[in-house]
Length: 152
Image (tube, rainbow, N blue to C red; front, side, top):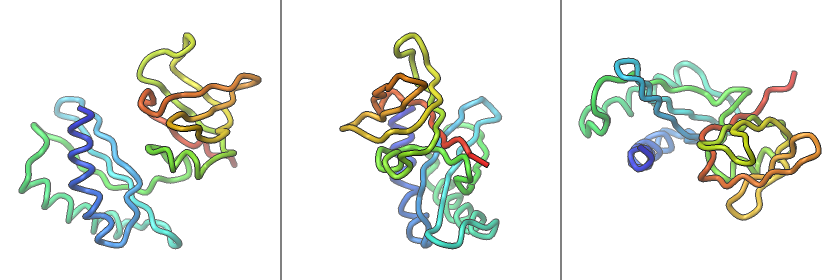
């Protein structure tokens, strides 16, 4: 599925950016008839509105209908990354150094898959997360899902 996501991203990113948005990332949650393709967009200053999501959704939907890259039924969602924004790329992790993050790995590392702690930065292709008194270097390719933990 990773290659399918790369193909979808290469198809969708230029559409979002051509409309003036930042393509933040995307995820495909394959669950049979309840599968979801979720696209995250952002803007520099104003934040994202429902109209922004609708504009991107309309354009992406048209391309997906023509190209038909996803087998079966799915729901297309376009959303702002929000306060608990997901992190997909190393540069996103680097930009949020100093924030608390929740990271889930594809397979256990050091006997665990879930890490919640202070994002210390990026070293090479690894994300550095401090949990209590321990620092973990987590290779980006092992990260299944990562989010900022909203602090209020």
